[in-house]
Image 1 (spheres, rainbow, N blue to C red):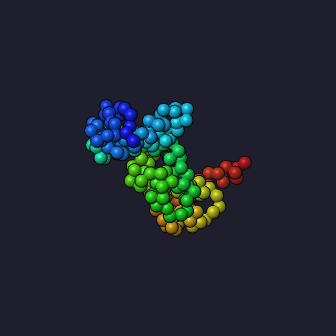
Image 2: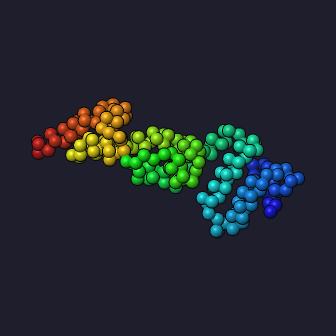
Image 3: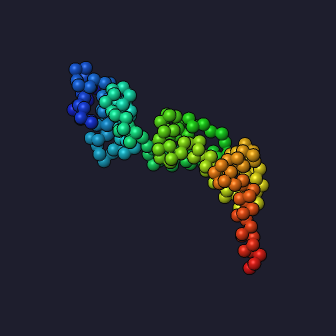
Length: 192
């Protein structure tokens, strides 16, 4: 089905073999976008955003008219994707999950998700999860749970793994941190 007249980034296309841009993928995505925009009251913003992203990626990889600066500026996660990724990571804190599994939750390829997640959070997915696990462990140190149990609850293979990661992030091992955090509170309670 030929697309009516559409102008995207200065390119007009009609989906026919003689048109300036005869690309069936662009024609199909353009038709879907046009259909959504013809009924603005029924248009779904997420659907429109996905079509625009698909057009951008397709043009950048197959047509070659998009510049790399523009592509990197568009590299991001939608708010629902970032929220879903973080929720999924946190819900599976003690499980071994792959980046591909998280990307699937966001309806993205593994590589696109990894780059977009880093752009959104400043961390690669694995690094963000490690940081979250260590911070969760730090919070649990305030309670009576043994370090070995904290390690398992937070998704570390053992207490030694927790200790190495904790020390890399906080600069001190978790046992020392526990003693430093608990001692001032215990002293204050004893002086009341």
